[in-house]
Length: 401
Image (tube, rainbow, N blue to C red; front, side):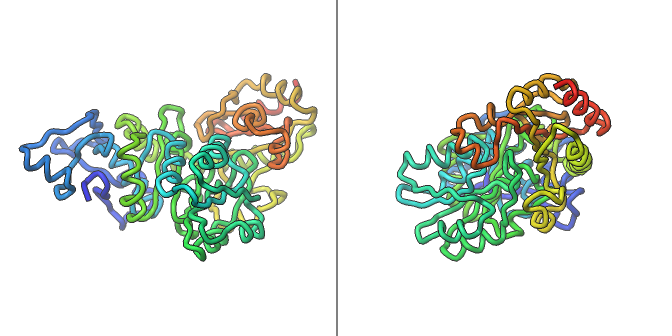
């Protein structure tokens, strides 16, 4: 295969934290310390024969940055090493990764199963776009294995889940669902954004494909959009690469370089995120006027034990309800001074949003109620600030509301 679809540089003997700093690095003849930024759309060939060979795939080398780019390739390789995958392709955004992971393998008449608890745009692809192309879709409550057993059947090609889910932090048993799908020859796609590649390894749990919005924790500082799909080499080279080459959701070299820089500190940042979020969750759980605090590290979480089994940490997102409905929830949001209102997450800054009127506003009231997304719910992405300042900010906003 051409160089753009292959892993370019690996040091598999290194441990994870070292791979985050050095993995996938390719130095030019200049010997630069930081990864080089190749801002180019195309490439030149020494002769016509080389051009012919590259397009045939018999010569390793780059053709066009929509197909592959050295800086993007370094990001892909580092993610391969971190995730424990065989191959990967980066995309222009997390939603481009989700769309490509599904569309590259589906055709009219195929059947897809998905958990209901999904980010709004993911759910839109599943229950609005796929049916337009003749794909049959079954939605299930992700934590209910009996529903999975009834839904998975011959003709099922793949399933899509988020775990933890957005925004209710539902935890799905990845291994159990993967086993059900593999029994009928289907593949499991896991959106691992909330867990990050640091806290959860879906491929080791039996999943076949992992997708990320690299915009979140991987960048982690609100700078760049990006996404990535990771899987085995057969899926990436035979299904994903042709789809991406001809539809064009390519990651820019500059954004890939920013994401490479983000990976260098990902392990450190995620550890701090988890520590801060755990303290904030326990703090909120003690506050009057706050109900239904949802966080995997709390014993009250419905899948607390499962989370401890398949995740090495609880993540950075806490959801809770503010007594008094939408009006008081809005007053609370508007009184915050440190945490800022934003629908992004996984950022160094604490960010807060009201899912019922933002990320999940497209759903009917009945659909939101089924998912536990009430008008009182607030989703808090806990940042890297001093945790006492975060708690002080929440306390004053609750009192003022």
